[in-house]
Length: 100
Image 1 (spheres, helix red, strand yellow):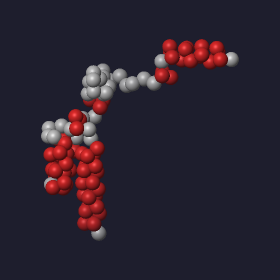
Image 2 (cartoon, rainbow, N blue to C red):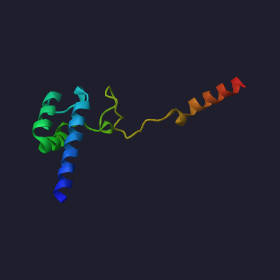
Image 3 (cartoon, rainbow, N blue to C red):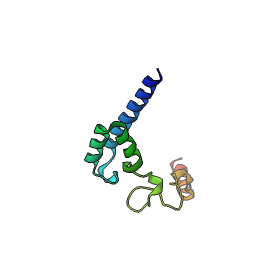
Image 4 (cartoon, one colour):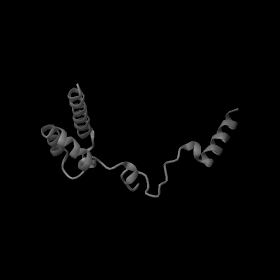
């Protein structure tokens, strides 16, 4: 029974990594072309899946610079929503008063 659970867990890891490689944009893949990562994950199974997770997977967005790559700034500043902007709230209140 434990070998069945371990086998299912390894299959789930392999499928997750294969799907992750396929759906990751080409420009975000690290160290090798995307096509090579697909081949590595398919033919090397669990070793390829672990290698993808450790070496090929894109870095988290919060670790990237904001300039041109869609990530946050390294300063630790999280994006603000419009409801956190006092100027937006004042303009919204003015618009609501004008409609009445």
